[in-house]
Length: 85
Image (cartoon, rainbow, N blue to C red):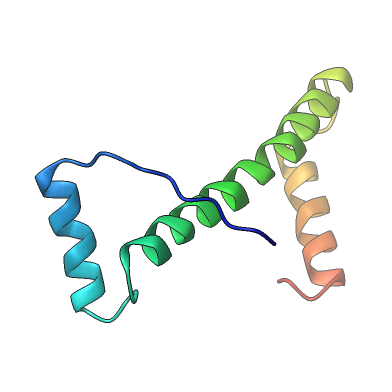
C-alpha cells in the first residue's frame, strides 16, 4: 500500500490536542493520530448502508399485527438461542 503526503491546517487548539495525545503515549506522531481518525470514520460509515437497508426492509414490511409483548418475546427468544441473552 502506497502513501501520499498531505498538508492540513489545524487550529492551535487542535494541534495542542494531538500533541497531548502523543505525549500521553496514545500515538507516536501526528500522522498516526490522523490515520486512526480516518480508520475510525471509515468503520463508523461502513455501518450506515446496513442500517439503511434494515430501515428500508422494516418500512417495506408494512404494519405488524403483533403486539409489543409478542415482538419482545421473539427478540428475547432469538437472543437466548444464539447466546446473547
